[in-house]
Image (cartoon, rainbow, N blue to C red; front, side, top):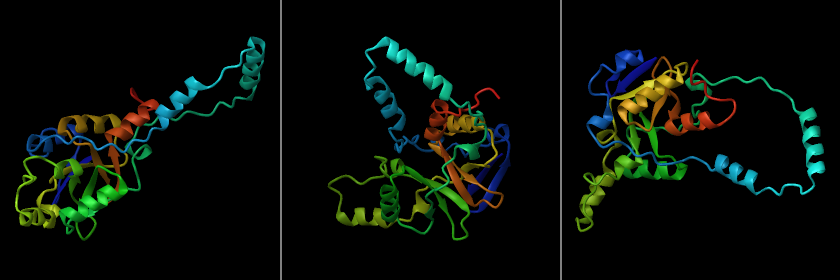
Length: 223
């Protein structure tokens, strides 16, 4: 189930097919597509390198004996393929109040090392999405020789003036593949996850989905 939230509240609630018929929520159509600001770790890559650089035993018989022993020690754990958003979403999500300035928003995103964050109103309800890539758009930044007062005015601007709104969101029990469809349609780097009241409970990003594809238990691609 998908929803669309803006400054006036919930504007839509329905299926992916219904969402795709609505004009105006494809933020990529009215601004440049966001380039994700990576927050991926290097765990998978480091593990792969480590696997290739381990010193193999030179004695074939010794290696065979170790392999046989390891097989007897293996415990087969049940595999539960990931199907829904709540199985892979980030729960410690950073949100931005719609009252903060551009400078404060930039500092908060940089401090937490994230590329984007949902924007919420005083009640905690989703109203938009802000990304660091959006703040760095060439058509938004003054030129280097611009008067310092112009830069100060930009940094003092409210995030509610430049955030993406309305913005699609997703329920925790939504099929992951449907989320991937919406991300492709909108060009967004991820979707806020909200409850029935529109309160942000998490965030699911392209990186979260890609990480689920290459880890175990696996992402269920066909279920």
